[in-house]
Length: 221
Image (cartoon, rainbow, N blue to C red):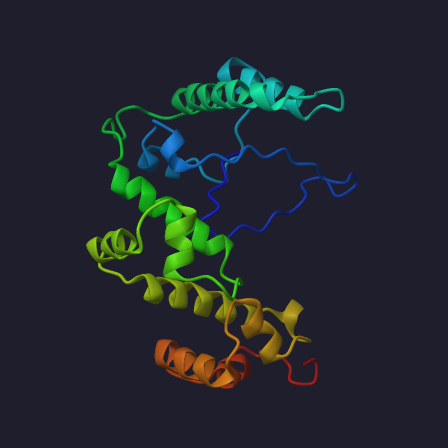
C-alpha cells in the first residue's frame, strides 16, 4: 500500500484477531522518477504483492528486515539504491504513463519534501525556517523563495498546519479528557494567548467555543 506521510493517516487492523505488522520503506519524493500526480490515485489503496515487481520488492524488503540480516555500513548504499530501483520498477508497473509523462521539477519535489518534514515536526518547539533550511541543505533565503513561489510563507504554512492539528484534536471525542493546554503544546503552541489569537483569526471563534460547538462533553474534560 502506498502511504503519503504528508497526508493524515489513521491505520486500522483488518484482522483484529491477530496483532498487525507493518514493514515500511520510506523514500523521499526526489528519489522517485515516477510523477507524483500519477501516484496520488494509488495512495491508501491495497496493491497485491504476489507477482511481478511488487513481489520482488516485497521479498527484498522482507529479507532486509529478517532476523538474520546484517548490513555493514559500506553495503548500505548499494542496498539503498537497489531498494529505490525496485520501488521505481514497482511504481511504474502500477501507474499509467499517460497520467503525466513529465518528471517533476526539482523545486516542486523539494517543496513537497519540506512540507512533509514540517508535518512530521509540528510539535518541535525549535521548528523554524533556519532549522527547516538546515535539514534540507538549503539557505533560509532559498527556503522563503520556494514558499513565495507557491503563494505562501514558511511561518504561515507551519502555523496553518499546527492549527489544523489542534482543531482536529479539539473535536476528537477520544481526546475529550485532554486539556486545551496539552493539545496546543503538543502541536507547538506554548503560549496560550498566541494560540487563542491565531485560532480565532483562522476559524472565527475561540478554541473553547469551537470545542463546545463540536459537542465534546465538558465533563469529560
